[in-house]
Structures are given as C-alpha cells and as structure tokens.
Length: 487
Ligand code: UDX
Ligand code: ADP
Image (tube, rainbow, N blue to C red; front, side, top):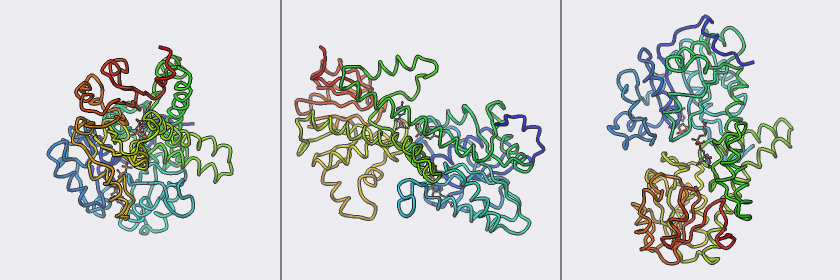
C-alpha cells in the first residue's frame, strides 16, 4: 500500500542543498519551482552543455530562455539568490545533499531492444559521475522517466563505484508535468510520488524529499510507495493518457465514415463521471517526448516478462497513433484530387502541442515528411519552434543530402499569411490559439490562396461553418467528409 504523508514523523535529515543533473524541459522548470517555493534551500542545476547553461544564466527575458514554457521566466526570479546554473557538474554533485537525475532517456536506436527500450546511457553516465565524485552521503533521486528497475541499476553502480564509507539512498520521484502547463502543474500537482526502499534508510530519505515538496504541496498529495511501483506508475499514467487519445482517434475514423461528430461523441461520453472529459480531444496524433517512449518501454517490459498479450495490447496504442497520422495524410491527398505534386501546403504549427517550442515526436514532422514524399511544397509556420529545429527534424542526422532534399520542398514562413500565400491547402497540425478563426484573419488568407482553397483541421479548433461561408473547403478530423454530409 502507498504510505501517505505520515512519513513526516519518520526521523530524517533536513536538506539544505540540492542539485539537478540536466537543465532540460523537466529538470529546469522543476528545480526552478522548488527554489522559488523553498527560500531556505540552495538549488543548483548542472548540465553538460555549457551553451545551454549560459543561456539559462544570461536570459534577460522569456524569449532568450533555452525552452519556451509559459510562466517559467517568473519563477526564475530566484536566479542568483537560491537558484544557480552551472556546467561544473562535479562541484554541484559534491556540494549537494540530494541530487535529482533529470537527463535525457531517448528510445534506443541500435542494439537489443532498439526502437522500444530506453537508452539509459545518459542516466548511467550521470550515475557513474555521482559515484566518482561524491565524498559524503547523498540521496540520489531518479526524476527522468525510466524503465522499471532503473533505480536498482543506479544503486548497483553507486555501490560498486562509490568511495568507501559514502552511502547512497536511491529514490524514484517521477515528474508528471505536461509541457505548456509545466509551471501550473508544478505549483499545484495532483500528486507528488516518491518511491523508496521499504526500510528505515529508504523511508528517511523519502521523508527528507517530502519535506521539500511540503513547502507548497499539501501533505495529503505527497504519497510514497515502493520504488518499483513509483517507476511503473509513471509509465502507466502516460500509457493510460495516450490510450484515451488513441481510443478517441479510433472513434474519429468511425465518425468520419458515418456522419457522427467526434466532438459531440467525446462530450457525451466525457459527461459520464466514470469516464471524465479530459484527454478525449481527437487529433492528428499525439506527440511529445513521453507518450510513445513510455508505451514502448511498457511493451518492452511486458515482452521481457513473457507477457506477449499485454505487450500487444499496449503496442496497439502506438500503432493507432501512426494510423491516425497516415489516415490524415491520405485524406489530404484524396481531397486535393489525389495528387499533391507541385501543389503548396501551408502547415500551421510544428510543435507537438500548443504553448511549447518542443517538437519531439510531433505529428507535424510526420505530416511534413509525408507531403514532401508526394513532391509537394510545404511552407511551415510555428509561433515558437526555432527554424534550426525544423531543419533538424526534417533531415537525417549527418546526411547532408537529406537536408538539401528537404530544402528543395520546405520553406519556413515568418507568419501564417506568408505560409498560406498561393497555397492550395492549409493543414492545422498544432492547436495554437493564434490559429483559431477568432484570432486569425482567414478572409484575408483565403483571398491569397489558390482555389479551391482547402483547410484541414487536424486539431478541431476551427468553426467550419464560418470558414465554409468564406469559401474554404473544410475537412475536419472526426467529422463527416463533405461528400458524405447530410446537408
Ligand atoms: C505528458 C503527460 O501529460 C505528463 O503527465 C507527463 O509528465 C509527460 O507526458 P506532455 O507530453 O508534455 O505530457 O503533454 P500532453 O498534454 O500530455 O500532450 C501529449 C500529446 O497528446 C500532445 O501531442 C497533445 O496535443 C496530444 N493530446 C492531448 C491530444 O491529441 N488530445 C488530448 O485530448 C490531449
Ligand atoms: P527532458 O525532457 O527529460 O528534460 P531534455 O533533453 O530536455 O530532456 O534535457 C536533458 C538534459 O540533460 C540535456 O540538457 C542534456 O544536456 C543533459 N544531460 C545529459 N547527460 C547529462 C549528465 N551526465 N550530466 C548533466 N546533464 C546531462
């Protein structure tokens, strides 16, 4: 059973200095909020990328930060006071009582488990560094999303390589923030989960970490479990969320073929309190650094445990996501009279969701590549994604010819109007508020497009009737195709 907050009565050490290895999308916002809410705690964020660190140190406004996250700049107000950024990893490790490990854990590209298992190389090297450098006891907190039993591996590495007499306690403390709402999620989390060994040392370490969160999180929302439950809960939470999206996306295909409206179906079903309304928004497919990676981790784990039926069950959530992207691409091609060759598509949005500049696993990447395959000109506009990132996503690492090929077909526009000029179709890939018909002048856009002018709403953000009145041919995910319409 999980042990809620009664752990506050467990004898524990008060932490005064923490460090976080990894200044990315998870490590920096999390550490910044911890520092912002815990004035008596010194927090240092260390990263192997000196360039990244100097951007965190020198940013004078939101735009100069290495990542875009609403509200992040405000919580960085404690920079220089009790929040510090450094590339001196060893010093940060040595000085800290508690170390968060928040480094990247991409899916393995090569070797056993390639395409499914997590590449734990970064976690391992960070762990080895801690073992090598530490001369005093440390609580090491696994924050990156990792496969089950990673904490065990970290513990073995620390025990085998640590200096004599130095003791390490390992905790699992998965982060549940979603990008775009990270600061809100961190300030008011549904729960904080801390996994520890079920012995006195483990419980004491968990209580030390709980005490930090208790600076702003109500005690009843801080729960402790054993380490394996904590690690597995993170994978399962993401798998369950993604499963809802794949479920409603599967329904969107039925809606398109029958005349039902996926928004109405989601609304009607979501009113059932047992189901609830969240994560039922049909889309062109989920993206982000976590969902696909974590499900594939779960699939890999299930296979390793000789549970092929369980593996196949979860794998289908990812397969459905792939199907949704290719189904949407087909709909675009079919609507544009079965050929995209020589046409121009304006791709509105490249981030994997609104309010972030992150493009990891973004559905827009798959769409852009599919359109290029059809020899179509693609003009991309996203309010926050950096141009260089788009080129990285559309080319193969280290293959110069792939970048040249991408540049033959793709341009990056400075705004929505430039992207849509002389285009045959607009494809909405990210649900940025700026793309809503209440924000953007679609009449003006329509005037400068080729006719018939199509708009494909992959995010259900537009008022189709309004756009149809302007003259657009509108095609929406999960809504009847025009030729099947009852009207
Ligand atoms: C997710 C989890 O929500 C978070 O708890 C975990 O810590 C990390 O992974 P994130 O990937 O940042 O967070 O964003 P999320 O809001 O979950 O969206 C993921 C993807 O699903 C996005 O592409 C989003 O557009 C899509 N989505 C989300 C839908 O298509 N429909 C929905 O109803 C909700
Ligand atoms: P996430 O979304 O999980 O935060 P990111 O890729 O945004 O992932 O951030 C991970 C960060 O971890 C990167 O900035 C990377 O440079 C950093 N990193 C990787 N290995 C180490 C390490 N051994 N020590 C410190 N930082 C590391």
